[in-house]
Length: 202
Image 1: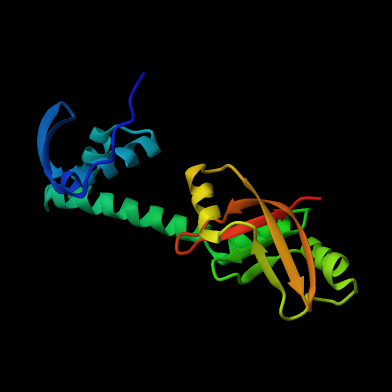
Image 2 (image 1 turned 180 degrees about the horizontal axis):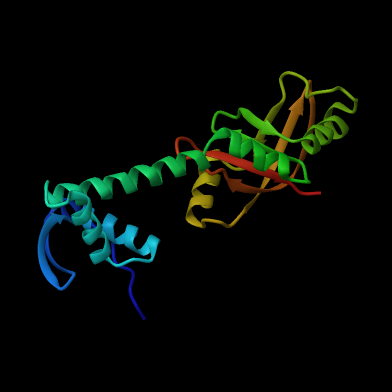
């Protein structure tokens, strides 16, 4: 059984590491910080290439001029920038709202300060039938929604088991009327804040 290796510390990632890479039959001795070697390794794996292929491409781009290690650092940094940009594109409120609207069951997205930032038509119908008992076109002002566990505790459970929904109870109150129920909670794909998507169970 392979044991999981602990992630490198910041000090380990900043340490200079000397590697010998064979490019076109020629051995190249290159010294880079560990963090750049790791990024270049990930890039090579993502593209189905060898590390030597990336080094060779950098040498061709330099055409005999410039610094190879500087070019490798640039390539690694550009890869990280592109990965960060992709992650940001996939983790925004519009994406969360789209996931909520796509659910056929009543669903909503709730922030840590109990602010609903997205809900779908099925949630609106649920509130109207269970709480408002009317056909108002939108939820009344003053709607309050809370879980039967602390928000931070539910977030912790979701982070402990990535990809696994967590059951929770909820309470919705509007204009003195209250209803309770059960839901499955999932963590929204946001990088800058914790938001829970709740899928109400019938």
